[in-house]
Length: 185
Image (cartoon, rainbow, N blue to C red; front, side, top):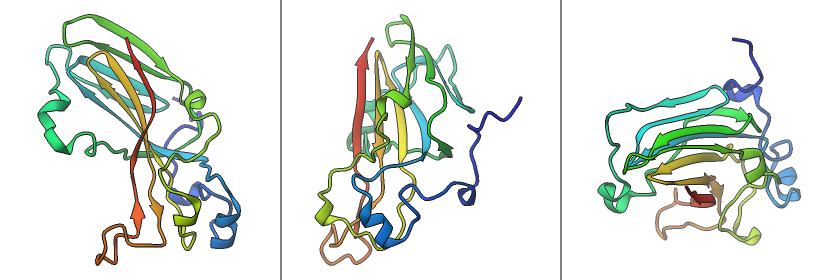
C-alpha cells in the first residue's frame, strides 16, 4: 500500500492546529482552526458495522447486535472519544456500511471535508473565556452509527481563563462534545 498522506503522523510531524503555537499567535487566530484531527468510530444497535476513513478501519461482527447507547446510561454520549491519528485534514469521505437493528442493510459516505469545510474548531466558549497561554491539541472527530442514524461530533480541549469546577485548579479547560452532523437513513 502506498502512503497517501493519510497515515497517522507522529505529533512532531504535524504543525500546531492554530498558527505557530505561541500564545500571541494563538490569540490572533479567530475563529480557531485546525489542520489535523484525531478520529474514531463507535457503533450502537447495529450488525456488521464497518467504517473506512483514510487508513482507519473498523470492522464489527456481521452476526452480533452491538449494544445500544441507552445501555450505557448517563455516560453516553460523554464516553465518545477519538484516538486514531493525528490525521491531516482531510482523507476522502468515510465509507460506512452496516445493518440496522431491524436488519436493513445501509451504506453512507460521510465527507468530513464538507462537514468541516471551514476547518473551524467547534466549541461552546466565548473568545473572552479562552486562555491562549499554551498550545491547543488537535480536535477529535467521532463518527457514531446508532441504529439508522449517523452522527459526527467534534471534541476539542480548549483552555479557559477560569476553573470550570471551582476549587479544582486543574479544571481550567472544556472538552465539550459538539454535534457537527446528523442524518437518519
